Amino acid sequence: MKLLKNKALIDGRWVDASGGGVFAVVNPATQENLGDVPDMGKEETLLAIAAASKAFKDWSSLMPAKRAEILKNWAKYIEEEAESLAVLLTSEQGKPKGEAISEIMSCVATLRWCAEEGCRLYGEFIEGAKPGTKIIISRHAIGVVGAITPWNFPASMVVRKIAPALAAGCTVVLKPAEATPLTALALGELALQAGLPKGVFNIVTTSNPKLVGEALTSDVRVRKISFTGSTRTGKILMKQAADNMQKLSLELGGNAPFIVFPSADLDKAVAGAMASKFRNAGQTCICANRIFVHQDIYQSFLDRFMTAAGKLVVGNGLEKDVSLGPLINIQAIEKIEQMIDSAKKAGAEVLMGGKRHALGKTYFEPTVITGAPLSCSLATEEIFGPVAALYTFKTEEEVITLANDTPYGLSSYIYSENIGQVWRVSDALEFGMVGVNEPFLANDLAPFGGVKESGIGKEGGKYGVMEHTNIKYRLWG
Ligand code: ADP
Image (cartoon, rainbow, N blue to C red; front, side, top):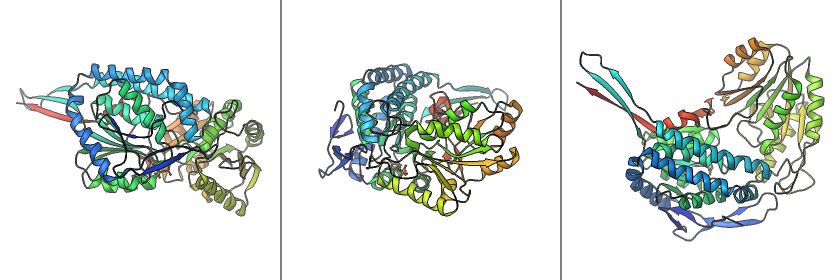
């Protein structure tokens, strides 16, 4: 397979683990081994931190326009290799190839946007509080960033962290998810080809994330931890990072309400719910988790939703026309089986699917469930699978209370054509993001991120780049 790398990237060189250990990367669609990658630990992480730390001085003092040129060059290389990268991504992660291409192209857009934004790290000038004094405010790259990424978006999660960091002048040690390191390594190869200086972007692969996480958080040279993954791991990293007072960006779990009001354009709402629920087989942190439909339109929404879900084609994401790939691993299957089982015991009805797909392996049938109590794990936890759970509501006040009744606060969705209602409800939702008649919240311009147990900090837009800078204030007397 093109761009398949079997080594990790430290200080511009492709290297093995010091003890020679490796671990396998498995294709979830076929269960075949795609290749082995180095199984690294503390020792190699320290080497990567040393390389990033050494590279920081030159990289951060390069003219922003020069950094932008290299990042745009990297974007061009990624764009040219979009097809090969998408095949690699689908092979290790499982999503349909069309979705993989979109993901790769989002990386191209993010790199180009951040490259430009890195040239706009403006300071400020303020007349001082005492006569004749002046306040000068400037922004400075934070230092070495430790980035830890999940498996559900093996390319865009990496680039969404790396691009703003590099644009701001930071250097990076990345630890990709153990299930999907190959796309990250391929991106590393293209970064070198594009002229990124050695040590600026390092990739440490491991099957033991705890070791690498501890090395990154216990090293004073690492000034920021940028993490996307579960709330559980985010809390561990936050505690560990406290000792060195490292800055944190945490993009954690969600439990998105998807609310359909009577005035909604039902075709649009069904299309939005389908995209939000079944993209990446339901394995995104912004997936519709609780679909609340007003009782007056519930039956017609459900009928249309069932028709649309019935058209999903399950299979290997590399095959043409497949719209629902396998889940990442067997644990993911077992987790949703438990959720469905306990919902059924509590009185829920499975209208479609609800079991493993005849294709075997980690394929699961598209599933539609109604009548589950909101106390079920199906409603209180992130489902992370192709399982749509629908609930009814009667009033706006009721649904706002239900939607906010979760410790999470990442994404939320409202479908309504009533402008007053859109303002009221979107104001009242305690979430970092609200999609109004629109399911696709992630893009390079917007500040992506959550509140409450969904994390802290923003990725994307000018905010994402700013998060990689420290503000310095000079008082001129
Ligand atoms: P998920 O359930 O989505 O796999 P995780 O939080 O377990 O979420 O994984 C997200 C990322 O965090 C992965 O790269 C994983 O290897 C890493 N990770 C998991 N546990 C730790 C840990 N204790 N320290 C550092 N990284 C971790």
